[in-house]
Length: 491
Image (cartoon, rainbow, N blue to C red):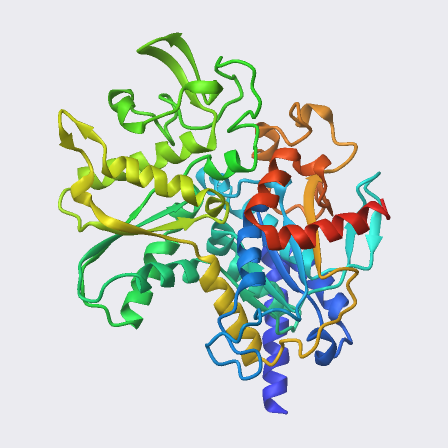
C-alpha cells in the first residue's frame, strides 16, 4: 500500500512538473492517459510496435527489425532458429517528413521546438487517430502501440528522455528504444582487443552538438573493459539527410541546368556551418556532370559552388572528416565509421566507395589520407543492434506476441506528415512543403500543429523516394504496398 501511495505521489509530481514546464508534453500525457485507460496488459501485449523518424530513413531500422533472426523465438536465447524474431508482431511507422531534417534545429538553437516535434511523434504512435489523404479528414481506428523505437539519432539524443517522461506521467510501462547506444555498441564490437583505433561518427549536425555518441562510445568501452586508446571523431553531415529525402533547401532533383539556386542552404564556400574549402577542391572528388553540382563559371574557374546530388554530399562530408583527422596529427587509424543517421544506410555502398577513393587519393605521388585509415574500415549501421535491443526488451517484459493476429488492418501501417490544408501559401515552397523560413521560424510550446499525419503515398513522398524504398528496403516495401492498396480503398 505504501509503495502504491509513493508511486501515486511521484506521478502527481511528474504531472505537475509537465504542466508547469511544457504544455506540449502535458497535452500528450493527457491524451495518452485517456487512450490507454482501462486497457488490460494482456491487450496491450497484442498492440503493434511503433517506429518513427524525421523522414523515411527510419525504414532502414524497420527493415532490419523485420528481417532479424538473432534469437530462438521459443526460448529467447541469442541464437537464430530460422524464423524471423518479430514474425508475429505488427508495426506502425511515422515519418515526420514535413519537419525534417531534425538535425538542423539544434544548429539554429531550436532545441525546445525539436523536443515538441519528437513528443508529438510519440503521441501520434500512442494515439488512435490520423488524417485522410483526401481533404485531411480526421480518421479513427489506428491501434496504439506497446513499444516505441526512435529510429532517428537526433531524436534519440534530444527527445528520448522527453518521451519517457510523458509515458511515466501517464502511468504507463511502454518501453522506448533509441538508436545511439546501439550504434555505439556496434562501433566498439568490431575493434580488435588491445589495438588502438579511431572511430568516426557521421550523424547530423544536431546529433554532434548533443555529444551523445562520444559519451555512449566511452560508456560501452568501459563496460567491455577495453584498455586500448580509442579516439572518436565526429563529422556533422549538414544537409545529407535532407538531400536523401529530397528536402528542397538542400537538393533539387531533376534540375534542368547547373545554375546556382537562391534557396539553397547546403555546403558552399560561404556557408559557415559547412564550408567548401576551395583550396582543396580536388580532394573532394565532386562529380560535376549532369547538374550534380551547381556553379557559375567554366573549366577550373568555378564560383558559387553548390551540391546537388547525394553522392556529392557524401564526398564532401567524408573528405572533411579525413581532413579533420589529418589536421589532428597522430590519431590511431580509422577502424569503423558509424552511419549516425538512419537515412545513410540507403547509401552504404556510396560511403564505402568514397572511403576507398580517399584511401587511394594521391597528390604529387603521395597518399594524402592513407596513414590515417585502416585497410578495412567497418561501416556500422545501428539497425542490427537496435533490433536486438528491442527483442530483448520485449522478451524480458513478456510482451512478445505468442501468435499472430491483432486489430490492425495490415501487419504494417505507414504514415507521413504533410502541411495542414489551408495553410497560407506564403509559408510553402514550390513543391508544397514548408519553406525554410517558416519551418525553422516557428515557436515552441504550441499544442496545435500546422501539419497532419496521413498515409504514405506517391503524392506526399514522390516517385524517386518510393523507388528507393522498393530497391533498398524490400521487406518494408512488401508491407507498404499492402497498406497502400488498402488505403486506396478508403481515401
